[in-house]
Image (cartoon, rainbow, N blue to C red; front, side, top):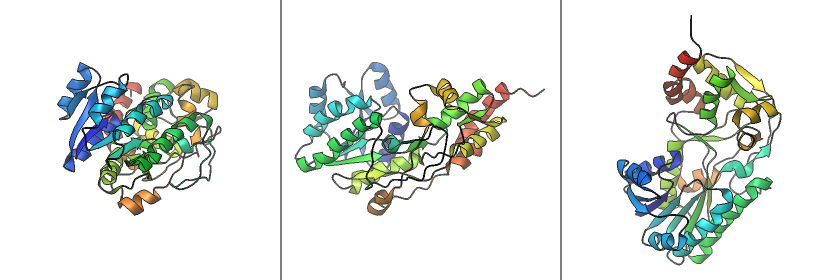
Length: 311
């Protein structure tokens, strides 16, 4: 297929692009400026000049492709207005359209780092938090486009990690060590955020393009580990203790907007449909092993020698 990928320069998008190329697809991606264009060309991706500020023109370009994968990071409030015209361009074609959401939709506040038993599969009913309700409306828009002849699907990833990269929670915990002198977790550290290696997640996109069902929602979960255990693994790599911090300290450390929904919630999910319908089976290393012995040790362990000088 000729695939138009949005977000190809991002952590997830770059992995998806590699995987789809391995599967034999031809990848193009939107470039908003010359710098983005150069980055795409360096990665072997054909750039397509466009902007979310000119959606009619972008939708016209999108119509010429066999599939769209939307993995761009934009404000939740803007997703529907951007995705809607792209979906309309595929109406009646039966072409696949994959939209990337996230399991923040499933978040349950855990202000003391407490454990929560709730875990959600794709078919379970969810009462979203106020700030994630708008994203679930975007999911609904995409899934209901199936009635208009689009093979539209939603991929809802959990915490994404792997290859020592990303700008999410795992990297944040490492980067906070220099400031705090410890690997920090909230309260009891028992709250859980399901996770997936970025390359296992990219496999989901390839499988969904091949055999995904119109209107489907697919989770992508390879495991879950509580934040205290993650912090202890980070501490082992960095040569520092793991330490509990209060809710206020967490917000000061990681930001009042981001910290509550990244570290102050339980977000547990199960990939029942993805495994059953797509035949997906994650194969990459688990998170703790990748921190202690794999890509995150390779990326961050040298930093620990600069932070904690040995006399």
